[in-house]
Length: 236
Image (cartoon, rainbow, N blue to C red; front, side, top):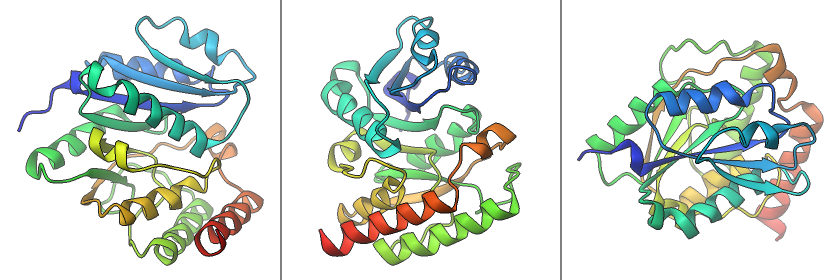
């Protein structure tokens, strides 16, 4: 089975990423991909102005900041409505801040080519040694996320909150996110289980900088994620 680059759309969530998103989008285009969708989640900087410089870019804008889960679901809905018309068969979720590397997409494509029955392929920083420079505290946080996501969904992943994923269009049509914030990561895995999705993990590199670490989740945010997810799972 051959997967063509024009059958793939990259979905990027962006919030105040004007200073970082240009090389991210350019790396995707330089790699030969033609479809890039950016959901601007109510940026207060000039992210929209930067995006307008790219011809042919798909852009959806939230008038105010709603959160990572809401931005991803907005992107999914855009693709559900327009994917077939655009000739899309696969969706790749990709970070706007330069942490992900487009060359790693080869591992995702190879996984689908090896097993066409897969519904999605998930990136992992930890299944083999990569160039990922995960700081110690972040690594502990991610480990806690693994156990929490397993508790919620019954699905064990080596990297439960990695945002680099590739999925079939039909999978996007089945998975719906209801949680606006970063708790969507656990909700996404729970939806995978509910929809009985077939998946594997493949190794990816993630590059951390002082800027990207500063934008990451801190203890207060982590606690809010846990409480919101527990409420949805057991009391909604």
